[in-house]
Image 1 (cartoon, rainbow, N blue to C red):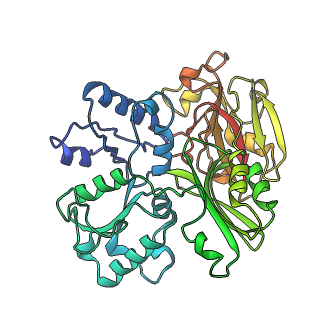
Image 2: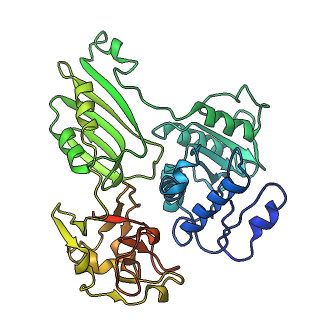
Length: 423
């Protein structure tokens, strides 16, 4: 499945004949053309019944949004997601710069990577390739694999993750690397003591640690997680990547202070904790496990609006039609999408967000969007009714859905919205 961002269809032309090809032209599959991707995957499964489907979005796409979409709706039960592969340009890396000098949008793609490849390695120098290897080794949680490649072929000695080419493929083949990464699966932490813990007390450390992982579709109550970590007696250190009702978060607790930030990681949720002697790390993990978010009912007739200071308001669907910023004909902004709506920025204004605030959309099935600055919402619209004023049916993403007009707002298309969170 190829997503050419423009209309020249260059990628589709180059790949034609090499495989069964579906082209999604115009727009990005993570925002303006998400239904096109879901339909394309379903059509391939029906018509071809392939062993594997490769999805190659445009270079500006957010892979985490593509993964979120594939985990939702009817496609989710028909496909099994495999490693996400992200490429960076080895010839443009800056070894001495933070994040190798990669722009923010590329670093966001790297966060979602299971396999990281440095392409155009033949045009890079040794310093750039060494810096890439060190960068890949420091990523947490660990990548399944990484390599420097030139014209699609891994460079000698560039294998990472397993430390050697996979034994079940020709040495040095990219296909072998990807096959091994898929076979290995994610590097999941185990419940119970760390491998070092049996020796920690013997070395006089006086600490105990444990780890746990959950499937990506498990969502947690962000406030309950925060309370569990901040109130845990004896907790010395904690770090985690969690799917929460306030989005996917990277958590880091040290010195008694908890820091939370958005993350592009999507493979799973996972937490590592270290506690002082006499405290049970597994009991803390059990408390976190119990902090799962309650699945809201999209049909309960209200939308939950959460302000940055934690205030919560329940907004009846009927009230949305009285807010300023109404869009009488959504199709005028998003062709082919009839309905009535209100600009999402008008809803956010009810919570008086700070100038630098971001908004996260939460769907009834637990899907959460990436944070989008409120200042960049543009004409993003929350659709709350059909064209004739009736309830928006589930088949159209109802009872509430968000749509982004092409080129007039940041990626945030979400169906079945039940919660809007400001941060």
